[in-house]
Length: 416
Ligand code: NIG
Ligand code: FE
Image (cartoon, rainbow, N blue to C red):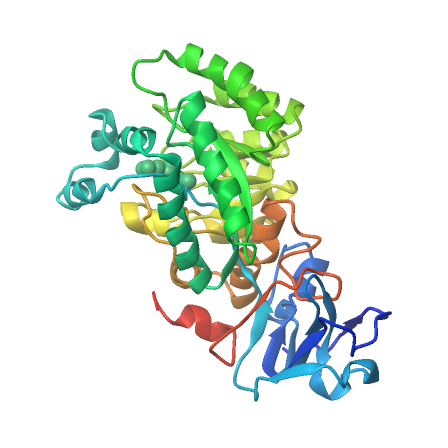
């Protein structure tokens, strides 16, 4: 299991100069180097590339050196050190690459009805579900939305999450969609210790009182160009499903987004099979998310592509649906990520380690696959794989010190 390859930079700055420090005697430093080398495909546990009794040297921006504590280079010996006494492991900061963080209101009453037997679709067809949250979100001030989103981001932080993708999609009109994306921008300013990535998901549902073609025109001709102009999102996402957007509508919206220079994502094959996983591969989407109903052809298409297949096992659990065929995707050679899908209807949880636990139990993923799911592959789904998701010299100083001596302890615990 142990791999002691070290990557070194030649540090030009003297160790005594400001800002350089180290964590030493980590029980294990999980670099994920093997995962990076294999670009997240066909992983075995040794790809965790752990270094026993390891050290990490870093400054405020970048990791400078990683290796066994005993081999700490001379130039770093005099710097400020924190001794982890071989009790704590160190790993890259977790990345939750699929959340619907910004919304107002509560759907606790709908949850109770669902538990009593009413289906998610029945509630949505009555005008509840997403549209219920839309009403509350339109009524909320930007300050109120910011306050609630900030609390949620801090909950994610306490679970080890350092990079958080946040989708809009509970405004469903020009003004409210921009308001929600602005909240994400404000979060980035308020919490520089985290990295926020915004996704415009105007095509999340069809707003009440608006005809679908008219709404799609608004998305393509009004909101998307404004989102781009104001630099309010990196990605555009579409919910392609029965009762939401069709394959053709999704393709039109996403091609318009790509033309503007945005990356694209799809809520794909979640409630019904719509061939949208294949569309994701065709459009070179950064990720295809959900995939509970993905076809074998969809699996093959994703495996051949760079599109990350994003598993959201908390959603299957919360909807009491069948889990996505993660093993088939992994065995076919796809890159697979794991995220919470935090949202008010189908997964009200910000606990990414819990999703890792579900991935071990119900998606039969091995330790390196789970690790990659919340580090390298999640970073790849956000276009950040060159600086986040691995603990290597040159990467961002973005890592977490676990209160456990081994990574596996993190997902062995359930919902802690
Ligand atoms: O990711 N799939 C679509 N959207 C959300 C659910 C949204 C809601 O119920 O509010 C999801 O599961
Ligand atoms: Fe989602």
